[in-house]
Amino acid sequence: MGEAVGLPELRISVIGAFRVHAHDGEDLTPRGRKARALVAMLALTPTRRRSRSALQDKLWSDRGPEQGAASLRQTLTEIRRAFGERYRDCLISDMRGVGLAEGRVAVDLDRADLCELAQTVELPLLLDDIDVADEEFEHWLRNQRTAFEQRVAALKLTIAARPPVSEPAVSEPGRSEPRIVQRLSPAAARPWVRLLPPLTVSSESGLFLSRLVGDRITQGLSDQWAIDISDAGKGPQGLQLRVDALAVSRDVAVNVVLLTAEGSMQLWSGSEAISLESGFVADAPRLQALINRSVEAAGHYLNRIGSSPDGARAFTQAFDAVQRMFRLDLAEVDRADVLLGSAYESDPKGVYLAWRAYARIFYVGEHIYVDRRLAVEESEELAKRALEADPHNATVLALASYVYSFVLRKYALGHELAELSVKCNPTHPLGHAFLGRAKSYLGDHEAGYLETCRGRELSGLAPYRYMLHTLCGMTALLTGRFDEAVRAAEIACALAPAYRPPRRSLVPLYLQLGERDKARDAFEKLRLIEPSFSLDAMRETSYPSTGIRASGLLNFSDSDL
Image: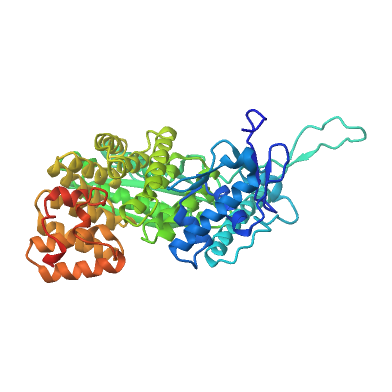
């Protein structure tokens, strides 16, 4: 351990030239290019940890798995040798991955004054003297440098746009003019939405409904994207929202309009006619679907506004990350995780942590992530932090629910969190869908089926809609609705051809229904994207097929195809 109590033992510099120093100034920088690059990758990873396979893919992408693993071991030995006996245990490695010891290593980028950097004539290059001849590493390095430059560029624009503010003069000899001080904002303000009063008020009930719908839309924007809801929103990165409700005979017509920040132009509108004779009108599925369509439309327009140099960086990064996450490309999931980590650094909102926790479901559910245990551990840690940061956010609760149910198999807790999500926002599609899956995990299959179907009905055109079809198919399967399970899985496959879970369920479902040719075709298509797939493998408890195993359909084997 270091002698300076309470101080990090190693200090890693990534702004400019890469260097590793002990707390007393001793230079511990490894000499080898790959050794330096490996430490740099760990330093710039939010968790300070990477799986062995991820490091091999970036630094030895042109080598086979065994040769890459041997090179990695040799490089770790080189790093420990450079750190010396006193600091060698600051580098942690095990079968699950490689990392830097928590609390014992500091990285200059984490504490750098970016406002000061933004005012320099020439910005230092990130990892200036790192050069590794591997295309995958070069791609990673370009992304890191671009993200760093964009962060500083956003601050430059903020500084340039902010008018100088006069402060009282400080007593200095020969000085009579007040000093001009530039007030800096640490980050751009988040996008905002202003809820306008309705244009027409036909009755007290109409006024109540328009306010209720408006409140639920703004709540959805606040929960999902951390948007500010304010009557005093200023600047171009905002929207105005108006909801009108008008009773017509035995129905009520609800119209939602999105306007530009200054209200001069209509951006989007949507409407629904809801029967007044079908119970509490606010619970009507068509109205709730309209609310979610409005949230999605507002999110897209705010993202378009925020993508400009004056926009809010955290929001645009998070919005982009969620779109990428559901493209079913693990490289995109990795990129989404980086974007969400950067968004959280700019604006520490619990919902960004919750999406990062959920992103790890792709690694576990796709059954191709080598370091599965690390993905599970990180998912749990991020979910805990998200819940601590924002325990009343419907999106946080919904995403954490699925992490605890699907990844951690703590079904009762997952059910509790999903119920809380629905209570916080009765129109949240993920809250209903994940509540349904939690119920089916706990054996209440009929209620689970109804809830997942409700979530799908509410989802609109969300990027995760194919996943909700998959959940509906799984809960239908558990209730014995085999034909409906097939239809849902086929729709999910059509929407997302590379998504594995629905294809896995189709193989035993087709066999159950006597459709052997279709089962064989589904099997062969799945093997193209998951070469190791087999019906025998699905029986293993480590394989992500809990629902199919519970359905009793795994009495078939590959020989039945």
